[in-house]
Length: 349
Image (cartoon, rainbow, N blue to C red; front, side, top):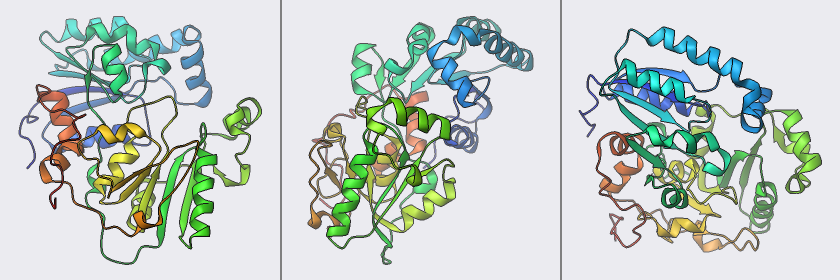
């Protein structure tokens, strides 16, 4: 059942662009009854702009100020109940101060799906927010934030079916760290065991890929011919999920938080193979559905591919959805323990 709490709420929403998730979130809030004004947190999403913002933000301050002053001009006569910020990579302090000044009583809500190691500006602005969340359990302790994992969007709702699957194992991901080595090793294992797999590696540009190929040892084994410089469309990913039995998730070695891929796989009713050992702490962990591999010593189990998916109970399943995610961020009192693997999370157990 959809929450009525969002009805007539006016939300000012900022996020970096990330594979259309910003629009999925904004549109879901609207479908729940909220009025949403969304703005891209970055002035520009070119590879150059992203690099300058991350490595030497001061050199980009003129464009940042112009971007945020333009937004202030657009919204100065509007009133909002919430300022919802995801990541906080660029937003300047003066802008937050002005939003509060223009909207007395506004609730400031922060969420990050990245580690603060990669986002120092996020640390600097945390003091402003009434509600603060991170997807990373370690960062939640270090920076005193509430811990809230990611979600799956409505398009992934129980995609599993009884028809014959085309692929036994599916991997889709941005090229980074040791992903290529791990995925290629699993591909070889699949071939040796008469299982069919599909892999898709994405890089935002040829220049970025070649730079890492030259200067990052983890990229040495990436084959140029296997890299796509165009991301898959949302509909293409959904179609691949429908045709796959098991999803492979390879988290960044420096992050403990669960990726979106984990929730999309489980939300789809698909089984999951992951390199993230942290998943064993979560209430939806079940060795029947989830198989954890050691990224430095990969061993797979053929029997795992034959076991049926055990349904997650509806209450937890809803919490894992985008609706449950939004309800918890905006309205809950953090009364749910996301790191309690002892709960009865499965409807058939």
